[in-house]
Amino acid sequence: MKLAILSRGPNSYSTRRLKEAALQRNHKVKVLNTLKFAIDLQRGEPDLYYRQKPLSTYDAVLPRIGASITYFGTSVVRQFEEMGVFCVNTSNGISNSRDKLRSLQILSRHNIGIPRTTFVADKKDVLPAIERVGGAPVVIKLIEGTQGIGVLLAESTSAAASIVELLHSQQQNVLIQKFVAESKGKDIRAFVVGDRVVAAMRRVAQGQEFRSNVHRGGVAQPVDLSEEYRETAVRSAQILGLRVAGVDMLEGQSGPQIMEVNSSPGLEGIETCTQLDIAGAIVEYMAARVDFPEIDIRQRLTVSHGHGVSEILIHEGSEFEGLTIADCKFDESDINVLTLYRGGKAIPNPRSSRVLEPEDKLLCFGKLESMRHMVPAKIRRRRRPSVGSLDTEIGT
Image (cartoon, rainbow, N blue to C red; front, side):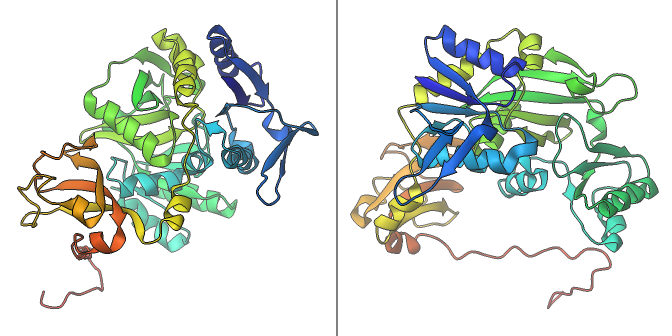
């Protein structure tokens, strides 16, 4: 495999370790400065130049995109994707994770545990927003920030309001987040590679510091995660579009609470803490995946007129409840069952003899018209009116 590592810091610990791991496994590897690329576009021929010369061919790309160059860096990664080069983290995944609000919006939609969070622009909305997340103390975060920078703890409602007002006056967008008291001064970093957590550590803040980041003086210790925490970390990375990620979680009373998913996680702290070869795990995963480039599903579905992918819920009382997949005769309607989701587990290519149960979800590909009658009418969720709300419901 010929590997390109996109990094502006060739001498940083993480970049050096990744290069070393690739060379140890007899791969060709080169560290390329992300800002030295030029993106060329013409019909049918997306291309890249590096230091004013046409870029040679690479099998895989490992992006290490810093926050200060997110836009240009993700544009370079996207160009590699358009050229058919395997990128371990997609441009969309990097963009999703870099924006804290955007990432939490996506995770919330997929029922991932997160601290209660609010985002406001109007000064009048600040105090009600603080109350909605549970009142002071609250955590205030800049939308973009790494290594604990731009994260503040406000002990009182008045202090929180003042901090938010000050940051808004400086044209800074901030999140107001519930303070998870039981996790004060500690969090978990799970390092995800592909579909598994390859290492995990608990970070504990020192002294009066509530931020547990190693860069803020936090002390790290290896930890053996439960299945719930491992599954949450992997799902969070995959939902955002990342194959390599550092997933930061709080240990809440209701289970794991995702704080952040980092698309360029550092290796020094967690390799030193766990004594594991995480760089090697990343390189080995990439080598195994390099022959399977991303497929543009949207383009394929555009060509397949009238065909598409749909998720079908087997609700209680459904005509398919209690039948085997074979008995449902999906194939006669030109429908292929790709995956069965049951109780948080994904079962790819389920056997035709498997009996369907209520709350099963089927990921299917086939004729959209044939699948239309299988999808029950969506019922809009009724919002519960809050105290003092002017909204009323007929019949209540």
